[in-house]
Length: 195
Image (tube, rainbow, N blue to C red; front, top):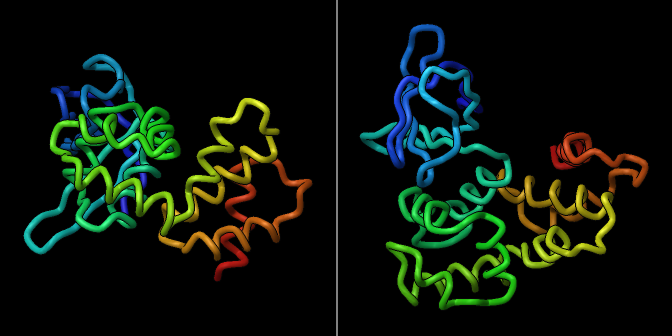
């Protein structure tokens, strides 16, 4: 799996960039215009390597949060593949999308190009009920949440994006001592409990 690319931004178009990594040009599909810098700049692109029968595609993201949301969409919402997930990320900021899911705002989600009312309903239903991300997203957007609550919520979302069930992710995060406050460290320790 390719976790990230770090190199020179060679070309940039809406929805696609090429990153030169030690003389090899990687074409990466990105949401919308993506903020990866100017051509010729050094850039780091977080990636998701997607393999299908006749196709291998790299999808790129500027932040962990956006990549996790992409993985959550393609892994947990029936009928949503990489193209639809990229449409969602291109049509709306990740934070705004999460807020729309938490509030059950179908009209806002249905306005995204390539989505209809039925797909919007499925996205909200499956992300809120089946996966249980609503509570974690509410914690992220709650201004009164403590840094520890946010870090634990982020770690739980990260585990779910990796394919773990919400119940298992919550149990593993709960086993991590509350003295651990860094999201990455919470995630590392929680993964040990899931092996």
